[in-house]
Amino acid sequence: MIYYDKVSKKYPDSSVALDNVSFGVEPKEFITIVGPSGAGKTTLMKMLIAEEWPSEGAVFFESANIHRLSKKEMIKLRRRIGTVFQDYRLIPNKTIYENIAFAMEASGRTDREVASDVPHVLELVDLGHKIWNFPKELSGGERQRVAIARAIVTQPDIIIADEPTGNLDPTNTYEIIRILRKINELGTTVLLTTHNKGVVDTIGGRIITMDKGKVIKDDKNGKYIL
Ligand code: ADP
Image (tube, rainbow, N blue to C red; front, side, top):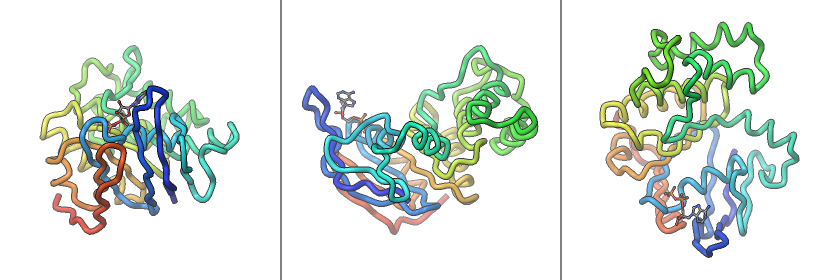
C-alpha cells in the first residue's frame, strides 16, 4: 500500500532527518513508529502527505510516486489519509459539531451527510454529549477524541497519528490507543508515532524503531496485550 524506498531527507542546514529508510506498509496494518525526539518520525509522516520532499529515494502509495502526483491527484490522495496531531488542531471558535462538519464540507460532503455522520462519529468516540460544546470546554483527552472523530469521519484508508498522546496522562493515552485500535479493527490502516516506550509496551503489534533518521528495528511479531 505504502512503500518508502531508500528515503533520505537532509535539511538545508545539513541536519539529517531521514537516512536511507526503506519499509512497506500493508493495508489494515497497525504500525507504531517509536524513537527519541529528533529521530525523524514526523518527517517520515509528512512525506506521506507531501508536506516534506525526500532529498533522495521515493515514497510510493499504491505504486504511484507521491511526490510526482499532479495537484489534482494529490488532493485525491489527501482525502484518503486522515491526520491526528499532538496539539489537536481544532478550530477554537467553532463547536465540536462545526469542527467536524467543516472537515466534511472541505472534502465535498453534502449537508445531509454532515447532519447524519457528525453525531454518529462522535458516538464512536463516546462524545455524543459534547456535540455543541467548544474545544476550550473539553479536556485534552476529549479534544484528541474529537480530532480522531474528525480524521475518520470521511472514512480514510489510512490514519496518521503523530504523537497523539504526547500531551495526555496515562488514562487518556490508553483511551486514545484503544480508539485507534478499534478504528484499525474496522479496516483502517493506522500509522502511530510516539517517543513514549510505555505506550509501545501496551500496544504491541508491528513496531518500527527509529534513531537519528534510521530504522534500527522493524519488529513484526509483537503481540497486542491491550
Ligand atoms: P521526531 O518527529 O522523531 O521528533 P523530526 O522528524 O521532527 O523528528 O526531526 C528529525 C530531525 O530533523 C531533527 O534533528 C530536526 O531538528 C530536523 N528537522 C526537522 N524539521 C526541520 C526543518 N524544517 N529544518 C531543519 N531541520 C529540521
